[in-house]
Length: 85
Image (tube, rainbow, N blue to C red; front, side, top):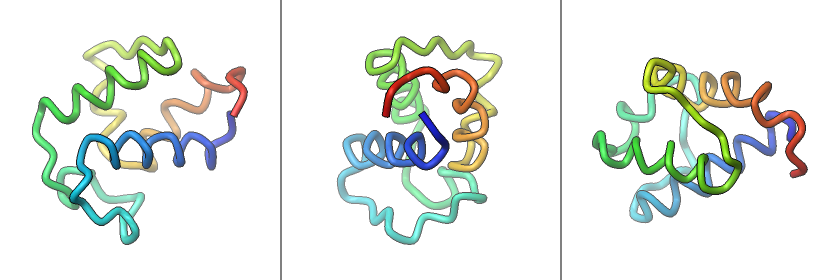
């Protein structure tokens, strides 16, 4: 999976978790929590969806890598490189 595909996956997960949010103006460099009303449970839902969909294990110590779209895509790219889009 390439970064553009990973971004789409994250957007799809965010749409399911926060269906009322407008993601069309999402700034990939800003933290999700500055742009959306996400609480800690929503964040864990993102992690759980990634685990369920792609069997990706994300240790709690790595959660800060998932703060923004840019950092999430950068973090996930090596983990999902062999996953078909």
